[in-house]
Image (cartoon, rainbow, N blue to C red):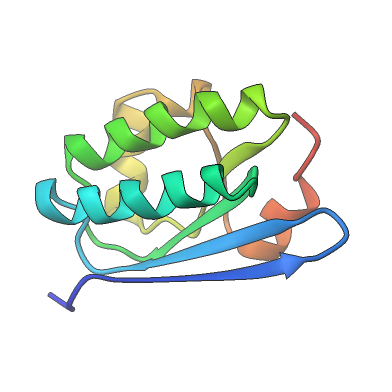
Amino acid sequence: MDAFQLNSRCIDDARPTWVVEVHGYVDTQTSLVLEKELRHHLHEGHHHLLLDLSEVDYISSAGWGIFIAVVRPLREKGGDLKLVGMQRDVIDVFELLEFQTLLEAHADVETALSAVGQR
């Protein structure tokens, strides 16, 4: 397993959209770090977030819970949280939990970016 890492970058200045790249497992411990990062973006007024999960092999229930907890305040501010690049094992859990009714998933950042502001 690779060490857990986060990297955030703004990719659209016209409609400020941030990509949060996640590397490694999202487990009980690392999900707290991820939650702090997502809440920081919310606090800073960054309401359009794309969560790049292409380098994530596993997401614990704590991680999935954070996504649900963060998406509501983002949407209340006119933004959203979109999941990007999930690997097959992660998609399987996403679909098993029926989270596709709550969160949008996209194959890549470009596709997700084109969907920003369309919810």
